[in-house]
Structures are given as C-alpha cells and as structure tokens.
Length: 242
Image (cartoon, rainbow, N blue to C red; front, side, top):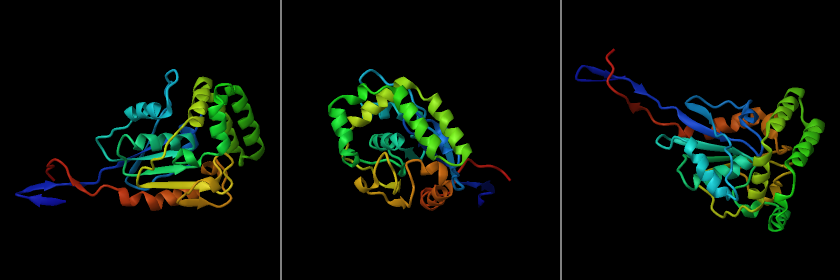
C-alpha cells in the first residue's frame, strides 16, 4: 500500500490474458492440462464460420475481434492455431506469441503441402476422411485412455465445413513475417510439421504433434519460465480508504 495525504492506495497487479487457439477441427479442450503461472488468466479463441473463399490472414483478423486489445495480452496457438496466432500478431500487438506444434512462416511447411495447394487438392479431400484417419491414428497411439477419449470427443465435434476450408487455407498460406517476440515449442517426432523444416526455440525430445496432451508437465514448466517476465508491473488503482 501507498499513503498520500491521508488516502491509502492499494497496489494491484493486473492479470494478463493469455488467448489460446486450438488446431484444425479442434477446440479449447485440447488445453485441458495446461496451468498458467500466477498473474495470467486463460481465455480461448473460438472458431467462427469462414466466408466463401476467405484467405487465412483475413479470417485470422476477424478472430481478433474476440481479443480485448485495450489490455496487455499474449497469444498461444496449437498447430493451425499457431498459424492463426502468427497472423493475428501481425495485425495487433501481443506481449509475445507462443507456437505449439506449429510453424511461423509458410516456408516451413512440407513441400508437398504447397504442391497440394497449387493443385487445389484441399478442396477435394472430404472432412469425413480426415476425421476418420485422425481417429484411427489416435486410437492406436494416444495414451492414456483419458487423453484418447478426450481426443475422440474433440474429433467428433469438429465442424466439417470449417475443416475443409482450413485445410485448403493452410495449403495456400503465404507468410514470411515472424512477429516478435516469438517462442516455438516443437516435438522431434512431429508428423504434421516435421521439425527438420522449422526452427523452434524449445525442442521436446520424442514429442509427437500432440505432445501438449501427453507431456503437459513439460509444457507447463516452459510456460512457467516464459510468461512471468511479461507480467504487468503494479499499477495504482482508484483511492480506497483502509
């Protein structure tokens, strides 16, 4: 507390909002195991219906309407959510941007992604096929059972129209700008965005694309190291007699 002319002020520390954006066809439930350090509060960016032939940067800009930009904030994105976070950070000003199992620039996408985009294959792959393939993969590989059940529920709830749009949007994404500061957590066994094509700041040994679910302690530890320096300094609020 600070006293001035008989009036006592309370020093209060603002809570910094951390906005999480999930992967393609997924939602906030994939962040179930994450725990933020004191002074930070979790918020989620929710997917909205894409406009016809909408480009990924334009869609990302519409997502920024869910963010209170009048207060300091941080962006965290998983997979497609990381790409969206990069595009949002180019239009607004987060304290920092954190990518998980994602890539910051389109040059880090596998070459065949670009080839598929040029051929327009994203428009022809049924969302039902992607959901079925993902279901089989996680049924065989994801442990423990609770994570597997969570993943199955998320996949079932995925919106088919959004998935088809998002797949095509990523295949045609073009970006060379990396917002700063940016931190990037990536698994050495990521099968969607191979680690040899990108340059993470934090490498998760033997981590697959969804290490966020099976290695939450590691992610929480890294967030516990990265976030505190961005906490707001104490600020004076309105006078409050004590």
